Every structure is written in C-alpha cells, then in structure tokens.
Image (cartoon, rainbow, N blue to C red; front, side, top):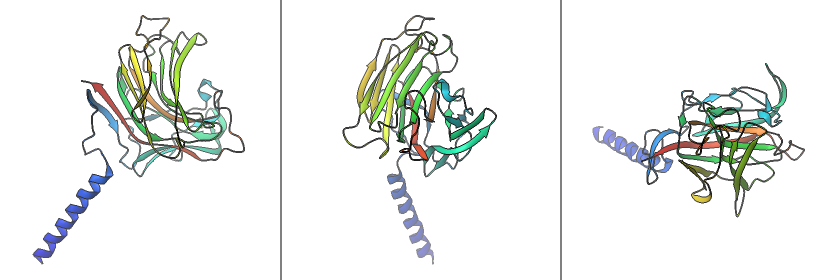
Length: 279
C-alpha cells in the first residue's frame, strides 16, 4: 500500500510540473523581464474575477466625447475573467441607467489611483474584436491633469483599432492645448496576413523622458520625440503620471456606427498586462 501511495504522489507531481511548464507565466511563476527593465505591476487574470484592487469600472453613457453609442457598465455581462483572460464584451441590447437609455452596452476599465506611472514599458497581450462601428482601445490618460483639460495634459494611445479595418492598429499621441486647440501624431501597423481578431498579439510602448516607442509583437514601428503642451515646457505633458485604460466602444466619430454587417457580441480578450520600469 505504501508503494502505491508513493507512486501516485510521483505521478501527480510530474503531471503538475508538465502542466505548469505549458501554462506559461502565472501569478506564482517568474515573469520574464526584458533587458534593462524591472517588473513593477502586472495582472495575469488567473483568478475567477476582476481584481478590483487593480481596476475600477467607469460607468457612464456619455459617449466619450466622440458620439459613441454604448452604455459602459460594471455588470459581469460586459466584463469578466474566464479561462485566464479578461473579457470586455460589447452587446447589442437596450439598457437604461441613470444617464439614460442606450442600444449597446460595453465596459471601460482603468487603473486610476490603483496603478499610475511616469515612464515605463507597458506590455499588453490581447485579441481584438472586429466589425463596422467597433472600436477597442488600450490607452493612457493623465491621472492629475496638471497641464489642464484634454489634450493639454496629454493622451497616449498604445493601441486603437476601428473594426472595419481589422488588420490595422494605430499608435497615437494627443497633446497641445485644450480642445479644440489639441493636436495628435501617430502611425499605424498593418498585419501582412489575417487580422487582429484571429489571435493574440502583444502591444507595447516604451516611454522614457522625451521619447515614446511603439511595438507590435516586438516589431518597432514608431518613435515620437516631438510634442508640446501649451501649459508647460517640453517634455510636458508626457512627464507626469498616467494610468491605463481598456475598453471597447461602439460607434463614434472615427469608426462610424454599426450596420447590418456588424456581428454582436464582440469581445476584446486580454491575456495579461505587464508594466516595467527602467533599471
């Protein structure tokens, strides 16, 4: 009998070793650090629910100033953790809240005052939604707006996609003065084959004093070193603390509205978020 128990324990241990090796990094395993960078914050979404010590939901129907059509909610129907990924789901449904009634719902999560950084490497692995009028984004806003209202205090768009161009992502900076005196600069990256809804990809920026670099799956496709704020000297406004946002918008000035070709629900799946600081 003792020999049998030892055999079972050994088999179970080998199974766990193999399972961990194939599962990739988790909260309890070592996460690889790129040369020159140290991990300071991360979420691997390995739990059963969204970690509210790291994220908060923005709940509103204001349309983001872009005439978007969704009601952002904190409901589990619109954002949840499943099979090791964060899912943000846009649904076509009539929903009424304190700010009115909308025909679509979705979610917008942020790390404001839970994760705020000045400079660093921001690495997010995600699979994106698609379709006319669908607008996923991974981006950053200033936590304190020390140089004034948008966009005098800046905005960093790590990744945006408009759903009618499912093979193209955009990296953009917004800066200058307060609206409508704002400016923006950026470039796009287009996949040679397929689109961003078919598989996970890693979207990264490296933000240092006076320079921001964009990468897609490790391919460097843009560096920006010129910007300004009407209320501060360079490198303002990108010298203050920013926080991270993840959302899927529906409709708006840039993507246009959904049409009869748009399939719902649409999901952005986020495998991990990792933030590093320079050594």
